Length: 232
Image 1 (tube, rainbow, N blue to C red):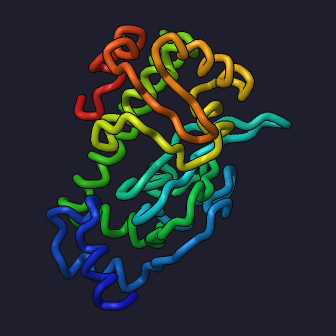
Image 2: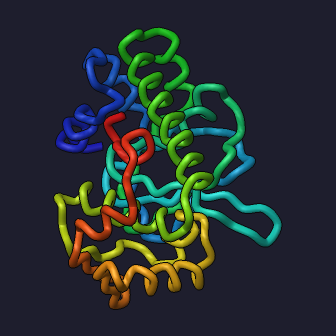
Image 3: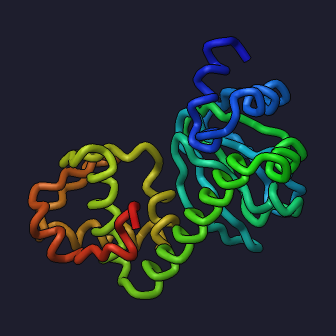
């Protein structure tokens, strides 16, 4: 990595409060790579060889069984995958592919485990990341089991809007079938759900979604802090 890239990587959340010399030691054995969209980065069932950190772009965490496939989550800059497999030295339980062109930091798994055992600040950072990942799974389980597909879509739109600066015009960075899988529904069900949001002044043109009545959409969605608030 170039000097400027090393400085950039030092600012990643997993290195927060970690001694600079230890960070440099990890980065010396790491790789910073660019990937086009559609590249499989991690394959379910294989041993964890790297901890991956998204620096730029978005990746899709997914799983397949027989002829079926489902999206587990979509991760953006600053997020790691798949940390539990790396820490425990076990196989990946999920696969990951780039949804958009992406820049990924790859830290060798053995280096992660070694520094995890030796450095309290690094171990604390990884533990916090694992705890956040666990809470995300709990929230998603509640989202899937307690809400209808229409409610999940409405809440996703509001969450995406808030995450991107309260915008009222959303341009999906990935195909609608990915969103459908992420929300736990078939693509045709997603289409019907978008149509059902028309009375709430949600307008869809291709990948562009316009939210023209936030109050009405919020009344439908009824977001809950223990499911939708990323700070809880």
